[in-house]
Length: 292
Image 1 (tube, helix red, strand yellow):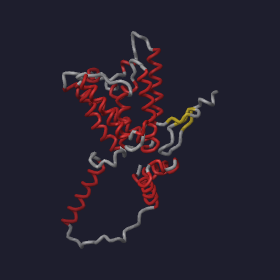
Image 2 (tube, one colour):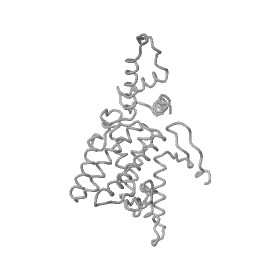
Image 3 (cartoon, helix red, strand yellow):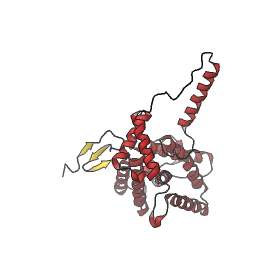
């Protein structure tokens, strides 16, 4: 029994878990799920007179009074539990784990979730400070929606029930949310949702997602343009001889060539054509070529 629940360190690869609890691989997504389950237990046993969970909820007024930890702790704060809380946790695990294993790896998934948490939390506080209305944030509902939309953006043509493509499912989900908030005249929540999706798309792009959408701003792209302008101005002011760069430059490295081959395979047959080993190899090659 003790061996079954013994903790062990995970591997160093991008798709390896952080650690293992017996046979359970604990990657970033599973770690958030376990923290949420622990929050369920705390909610069930905490004293009614001094509830712990309420001290973790993002209350903009409390944050403005100096309780800054609430900007980070609100996704695992559960002042109440319902069937929807469990269902949200399941969907977060299902889509988050797939996004982590096949697209991001554990480190980028961690950065993505931290970025989404901070963006949504700070946005809530900023809107509460600027508008005469306010709202609380707690639980994984908002984070789960962002994770789901990020997964759909990466796999828009994957099929759901009744052969519905993922992009259509995403449109329906966002549409229902918007119509519901409009119907109840919940303007604060509506503004929070729409601005949150826009800002979190920048977070997703910063960790390597949404690369197929050129209209989403990228810090890497802006840096490369700035460097390009610097090189052009340098050539304009140079008085030395002109050097013509021909096709005799160094050939691509074996890592780049292998990554190009895997990307060609995805382009021809889709992500599903890669084996688990090839997906792990693709993530490792991407990390190596980016210098991470």
